[in-house]
Length: 360
Image 1 (cartoon, rainbow, N blue to C red):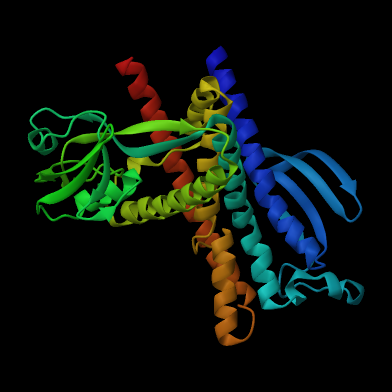
Image 2 (cartoon, rainbow, N blue to C red; image 1 turned 90 degrees about the vertical axis):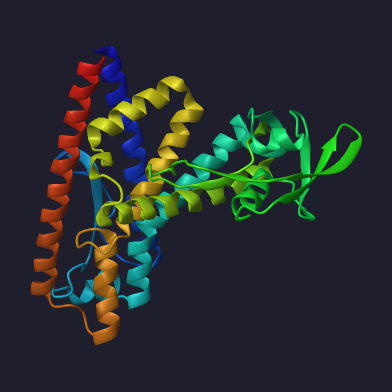
């Protein structure tokens, strides 16, 4: 019970940070462009706590699975008083409205970069070198004479100093023999190795055969290098964003099971586990969650930010705002889709919970 409460608290704190940052993106850019903000709410439904400052009402609502920023003149057909015309969202230029909508997901991606920078700066950046950490028995590498501790410095005459370069060269070899330049102690020499194709699986669980030679990389944790931490944080944010889109696409076409979709229960469990492992693990988990929130919010689904961007794209083509009745129809469809998705996610969470109880 204590573990469950710990997980719930960790999830509430984590989701709260992501939601606040997301809505703050909308809020900040709206204010920057002179748009009046009526309400800034964390959560939906009945308001549990309200405080008004200036023209804006700040609220904490009952259901903390999202939030919203209500602006003056959001509805194109809403009647706006003449004295409020200058701060009406609907009366701003198309580019400014796009910027306000994009700011929410954009701030989630920015938060991910900042969190990863903190993790990599204070906990170190995992660096995979071209130094061999181990050689698989009977592998092409062992047959060629490669031993643990060797550093591979070139492949077919091309210098390599990162594992990604070496691994990419081997996987793209097509099975042809490779000439590797080896540094062993103070000695440098060449070896020829014949890659072999090995069955494996990618991150989505799909079968993927790759050319390999049977070596592992020496992994070190590099600390105290802010430049490396910043570069890796941006790279990882981009990489995770791409993986999120790939996973979503593969679920749609049926290549990946939708059973992988998780809801609040799974998020709470994972948040609790990561928090127990330490602050660094928890911050890294929040970064991945923030990336998912940012990327998925950009999907062209009505109600989501991407849905608003879709309406703006149509507006740019037809040179006038989409009629309210069409917007409302699309938003109702979007709400239904999101509700079905949420129900399915809860179902998956419950099934996983009971499977774990039976298995445990």
